[in-house]
Image 1: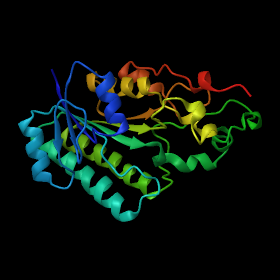
Image 2: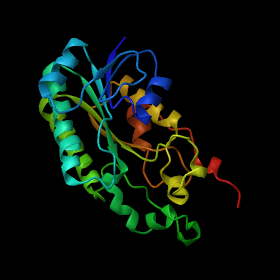
Image 3: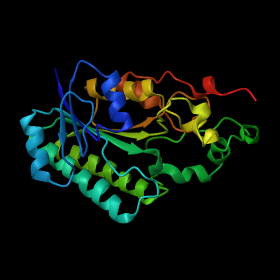
Length: 257
């Protein structure tokens, strides 16, 4: 079985991975314990320790989820956790011979598009204001972060390209949308936007599993979003590169007016 290190294993997506992705030897890494069969208590600050953890456990793939995930996070926290910590993960992976990193990026890397027509109307639920079919935001659209958090994740994506092109470390960047604990977009507080951005537990697990199994990963960016009627992000390259298409649709959960 392939040995996979999951950083931030105690978090929501870490738990989804453990629940839904099998046939791999999953090793958790977090500052607190998780329900993984093996959890290593550590953080991202010590490159030497991370290298030792990956080498000792013969890690082949890293799923890097650990981060300060707050859109309102300050510069110090983003720098420490999302920039320096992410570099430590990439460098330890290179030193230890890891073959692939699945990097949890964020939709906030391109969040400023949501201020523009037609995406602003869609995320507000003003579907009647749309004049025609719209073009989805693609993985190669310009970087437009909406926060320091989005900026820090854009750094991680660029770091991934650097490590692929210089060290042949294969990297899949997942611009994750709205993965929520109750897995039901109809009861989320930001209900209008979430009908565009929702990603079901099955779909985020399916996307991650497809990235683990694929031999086609080079440096790639994928949007972690379900196949929602009103999604604003493109998912075509998931089918092309991974032979995976998300199945869920937030519209099926919308409560009748």
